[in-house]
Image (cartoon, rainbow, N blue to C red):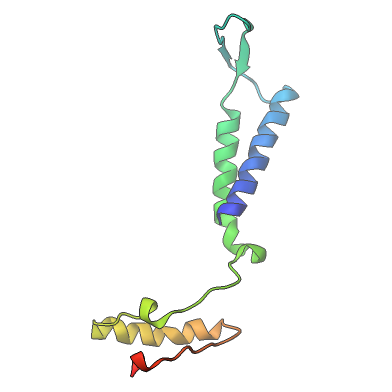
Amino acid sequence: GCHVALIFWFFGILLAALLAKKDILPMPLRYAPGTERFSEVCPLGPWAMILGTFATLVGLVLSPYCPRCQPMDTCFIDAACVHQTDEELMKRGIHGIGGFLLVSKELRIIWSPVYL
């Protein structure tokens, strides 16, 4: 989801900059840098922060619904996904394998004598 959130953030910042440049968004604050070479007073507003944060949150909320943003190669490793010592957690993990297989396109079994 972070790629979608980053894209939404970029467009939120771009929107804030364009609306501020067109004087649609007010710039209520002023900033004077106080350097020798630059003595102008710059208008300042909270819009990039507000729109950027809002757009990032919208991107995070919408990212699960973006089909191209889902990881293509997801794997289920028995030793990592099913508890190996606690019997109750092991049973729950084994029962959960069916849900994973339901949405899988392919099944690969890597077997070695260690599992015997």
